[in-house]
Length: 210
Image (cartoon, rainbow, N blue to C red; front, side):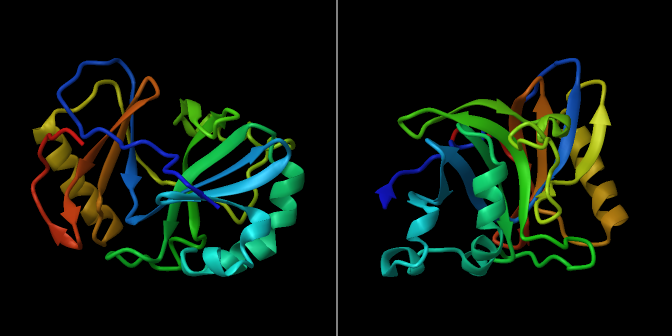
């Protein structure tokens, strides 16, 4: 097992003026990356990377996300066959955070929010956040039904400021009739996050370097 954090920190929303903006829901989950390197499947969670054939070791059993072992056992053959070499699925493993999601609305445990490529040093690059591109890590160019995609909340012509995001957030919570952690704002494949719930409590969003 390798001690390493693979997915970088995401910036918070700052005032900007790009042309195309896609706003997705920020799920209250645990960051998870699944990638293939040299024809071998690896899992990256928190500060650790482990090969899929290590999931039965005591070291990995102590750190693996709740429910992930059974999920990998069920789907590892598909991932080994269908995932393109040097491709990575970036997403959230839900069910371990403060917010609880209904299985009627969120049937899956793993929700993609990006695709990327991985180099021999196990570093990610070439991030893409538009959902239409999520098919390309798969050889069949079909996303399997056991992998979800983070919900798109809004598509706008401009990047909203904080006041606009506050209004959009309030409207989205009313629409979904549940608590929402926040948004991820994607403009030209550059993302930033708008956070409204911290540790399950509603807070004001503010800019800060992370």
